[in-house]
Image (cartoon, rainbow, N blue to C red):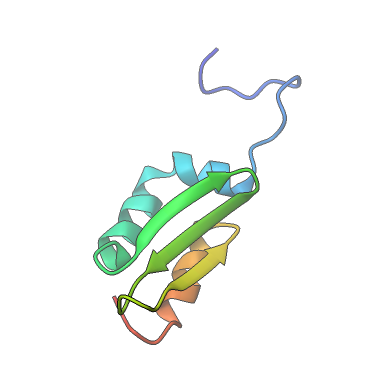
Length: 80
């Protein structure tokens, strides 16, 4: 059965659940996607936000879930 969790399947990580939460992902991308490249890595399960404010600078923020990533992006001080 598609979309149903069975006892044989491992539970979803918080990041995997966030991938399935299209509304939350769309909100974070809508707010920060213009300035940041936002991606999800399944192994290890981490959300990354990366931006290059200048050709020689690289800012990277990592979080285990979208809520934490959004909070970190908001606190980055450069705004959406």
